Image (cartoon, rainbow, N blue to C red; front, top):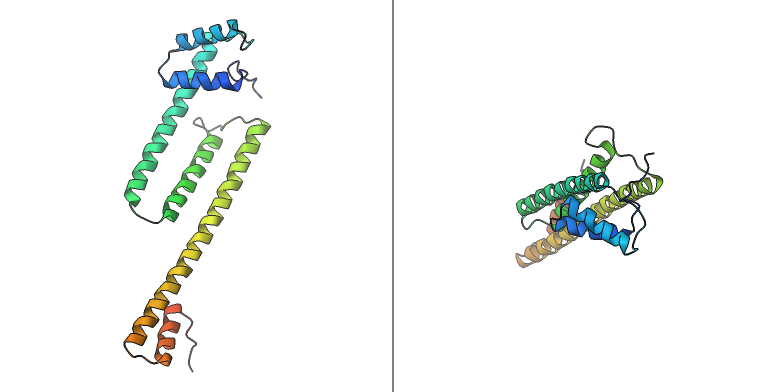
Length: 185
C-alpha cells in the first residue's frame, strides 16, 4: 500500500480548511503559504512540499468536476421526472450511488482504487446501505400499490352501489379487478 501523503496526514480541520480555500479559488502557492503559516503557528508539524499541494489540488479538482457532473445529471433527470412519485427519485439516487461506487472501484485507468481497510469498510457499508435502500424502496412501492388498489376498490364499490348494482355483481367486478376470479368449469 502506498504511504499516505503529507496532506492526508494533516489534521482534519486543516484539510477541510484547505478544501474551502481551494473552492474559493486559492492557488497552489497560496495554499502552500497558508500551510507554512499554520506550521509556524504550531497547528501542524509536517513539512508539506509544493508538489504534495499540487497533487492534492489536482485530486480535489478531479473530484469537484465529477461532483459537478453528477449534480448536473441528477438535476436534469429530476427535471425530466417532474412531479413523478418520490420512489422514482429514490431509485435514481440509488442508481447514481451505485454508479459512484462502481467508478471508485474500477478507476479511470481500469485498475481501481487502492483502498486501506477503513476505506474498504466504508465502501462495503455503502453497498449495504444501497441494498437496504433498494429493499425499502421496493417495500414502499408495494405499500403504495396496495393503498392505490384499496382506494380504487372503494371508489368502484361506491360508484357501483350508487348505480344500483347488486352485491354479487360488485363482488364479481372486484374479483376481476384484483385478478382473483376462480376458473369456472
